[in-house]
Length: 274
Image 1: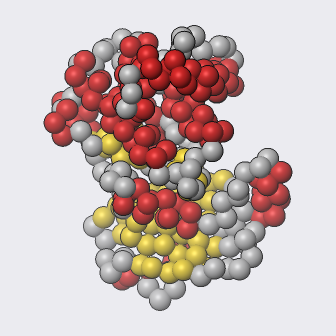
Image 2: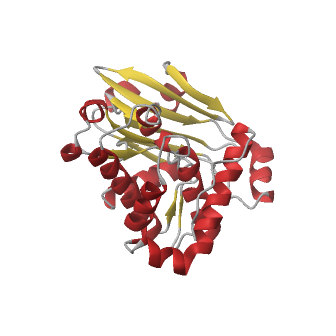
């Protein structure tokens, strides 16, 4: 598989050998693991995020396959997911260069360069103080509605994120500071492992919703807040949804609790979905 697309703004910086240039760029490293380095760099007068894949090796590919997971062998998977979200009207980072080369999936080299989202914070950062410093009711409800909308659009178009946590949503820092409901825009990030099909399998739907619930477990949400999410997500009354699909939402809670016990070594606060 060979792909190379570089925007006109980046061509002067990547030169005639984009792969070699990308491999030697320096910047603040966010992640460097399993053959993938993610870092922030400055080219000209703009900041960019770069994901450079060196190849994950057959050992990692075999491990993923034995656990019934499709291995991600290049940056092209994230590029496809980003373009799909943009077509669906979900805000995300903007790709400005994509490159893939190599037939061997274990050693395939690739990169994805995106515009940096400046002056934004994650929903994890925003909500960290909510348990003691409550947001306005209007702002909290607007955020719940928008997160539910994004989750609903993903599900309705056969996309599951696989890391659907609050830390992968970003919001403009000034909008967050002012709690401005009229200018609310969320960006969904880190689509490296996203999967796209005709329909999201139940297993992955539960995992995404469970991850979201887990990441919001300690931010001071009430049961009414959670039911408000259910209502926006399903476009149905919570009572009817839970009466007909209570087993699904209880499975979502169990998955969230599993995440919680893994990270915090104690059970999550119970949530009644029936």
